[in-house]
Length: 83
Image 1: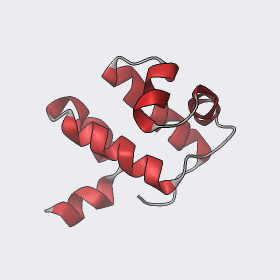
Image 2 (image 1 turned 90 degrees about the vertical axis):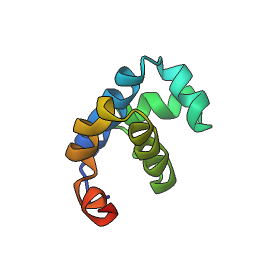
Image 3 (image 1 turned 90 degrees about the horizontal axis):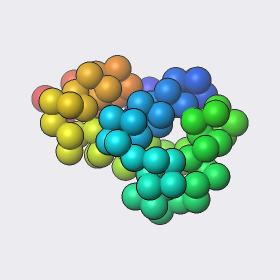
Image 4 (image 1 turned 45 degrees about the horizontal axis):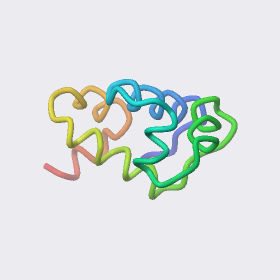
């Protein structure tokens, strides 16, 4: 994933969570982190580790067409590499 600002990461986490229909607590459980971590990411106070970003990317990929626009927006170079 290219270098992203905290605001972009916050948007990525929030949009992915909402698209999946999960609460912050549920997303935290899916990612194996605390609710506080997800909350801090969404509020731009902390950044997730790269492994968490890969997990979010995988969640978006598993959504198929429903996640494609978010993949294009937040992981554009990864899509080109996968072609």
